[in-house]
Length: 154
Image 1 (tube, rainbow, N blue to C red):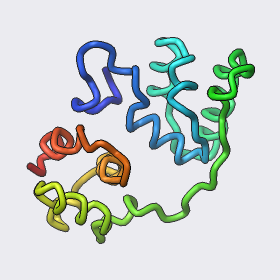
Image 2 (image 1 turned 180 degrees about the horizontal axis):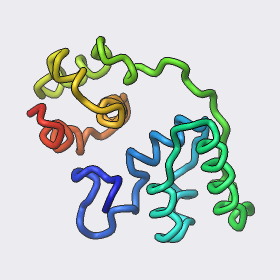
Image 3 (image 1 turned 60 degrees about the vertical axis):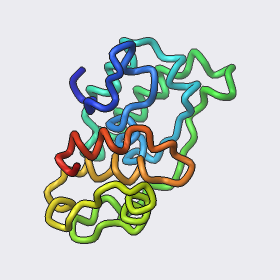
Image 4 (image 1 turned 180 degrees about the vertical axis):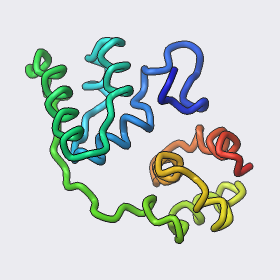
């Protein structure tokens, strides 16, 4: 499916979890939704959200409105609500010239190869975002090695 990394496509149902591109858009819009909220959406709605642009301020506003309209029928479910969060002005993944300490430490702890600064700089924003999300504490790291391979880092 377009918009998903290979490591997110397990063959059975690639949109059963919130994909990185959706997480990226949610962060850009200052929105957090639960997996329960994601699951309440139909497959068509999920595909639509993954495909929607979310770069400009106008696109972000449209994205927020569209997501709110999709989740409105589920307003009775407290786990399917939209939570507004602060938008980071300089998220760690956005700096092409510094590999976040979290990424380096986690890869070292897991005995996985760390990217060089040149490799980090060459990654797309979404790839750097994904690596940062996949190295967060509490994350199972199951997709970390597949992501490193997909991004040409392992």
